[in-house]
Image 1 (cartoon, rainbow, N blue to C red):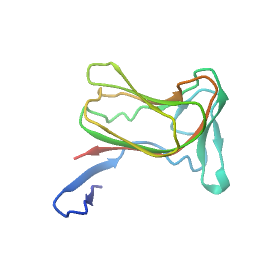
Image 2: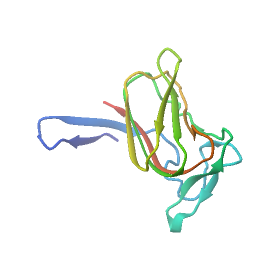
Image 3: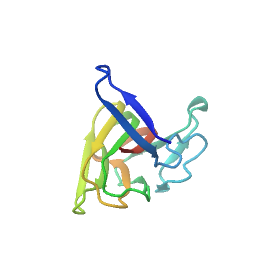
Amino acid sequence: MKKTLFMSSGDVAISYGPELVTNGTFDTDLSGWTADAWWVWDANGGDGRAYHPSSGDYKAISQNPATLNGSSYKFNFDLTRVTGDIKIRYKNGAGGNVDTIYTTSGLKEIIITDIQTGTAFFFSRNTLTTEFYIDNVSVREIL
């Protein structure tokens, strides 16, 4: 199902393909994700999310949307930072790591124009003693 977003100017329309992430809302568990045992599902009062308890070890959660094909994508998620710096990683078209580091909470968005076919998206700590939550993870092709 395609959806169209109309910008305030009314002159530009951006269309997106279907959602490519499985269980990006973490409603009831971490299913669909590859997670180190350190990660925990947090009920959050009925609005589930993934929780990375305070740790200095590299403990990632990832997902590989199999249909990524090198096109451009909109990648967004809600991040709640408690401590430390959070790293998001994927691979570019040449196979090199692309890292984005976050030090604040909020809705985060990355427009990806160079991505390796079949890459996975990783969420992990960047600095020692990092604690954070993620929710509403979405990857959609920009059409």
